[in-house]
Image (cartoon, rainbow, N blue to C red):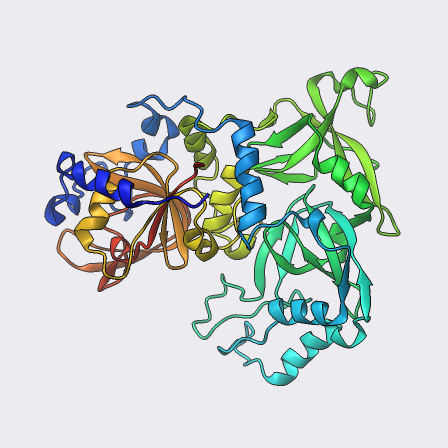
Length: 469
């Protein structure tokens, strides 16, 4: 899916005269209705309908057959996205040791516990001992599993939280990502305390709590994953119906993008778990028995919950709607805090269309899938402004360590929605202001800064549109 961008840049340059791009004009955000210290944002901007009023956003951009092709191309050509069920059936001892050392590498930078204690080599030796390298067999037959609950993916097999020297306790440096019910994994190794598994999901390799994974056969997991009759969670979070005598399936949290097979309610004898299923979706949930083995259980999701039969049509209107369902959710580094970060935000939205992505912003931004406008370090500010004048809803804007999604233009100025921690800009008095967002927020793009001397625009290295050749 590698696409030449020369023609895109030339087209953008040719059209640059259509959009005013002077620095002074673009950075002026004077509005008496501004609702907070978030520059250029009014209450109107915080409604999805505001961004859907000026253009036709209902056209389907990719059909499901094209999305399937897109994902397959990722599996075939992008090293950051894999089909976990295509993982090798067995590993050598050295291969497993290499994988453990890859994810559980001792960081070069200093790490601290919340009380300020510096982690020393003895602390890392303890974590590495639990990684169980000494007990790796000469050959290991891969096991297969399904996630039965939302859980964490960790650098080491531990819940211990550690931080860098800045001691921002929102940013646990052992927190890598999250995993969600119904996601398949290849199980590669087990920790010494038998409480953690080293797994490969579709876009990450890390340690997951053993209790979150049910072990099953590759064949039954493949059938589960490839079902043609399914629902997709389209709300930020939905929950299965309450079941008083089965905690495994009662009020289970399902985040946006979770996909579950559906069962015809007519096949039931008028009730399930003491409730008539007529007003609910009947779904097949992966659960875990006392031996850790996979057992499929039927559960109900009320039809009032925000789910969709099959994937959502991939339209700009739906991109906006899905993004705004997260508006105001607190930022969660690596899916911490029962939330998500900038790439989790983007990834969950696109999963509702069936589109998969790499986990980290750098992996996304440097990969060549989709249509890309890459900028070299020598790119001028004006070249970037020109490209920013040609955006479409859903385009992804990458700066080091962050990704934002384009929403639309307000008086010719680009606005974005993103899951972001900090906020900096120069105010009307040309004073540098530093505040916090720490959640999913709508902001103008142009005035934002990463530091006093560097703007977001200065740092943009890629703009990506999800498309195929």
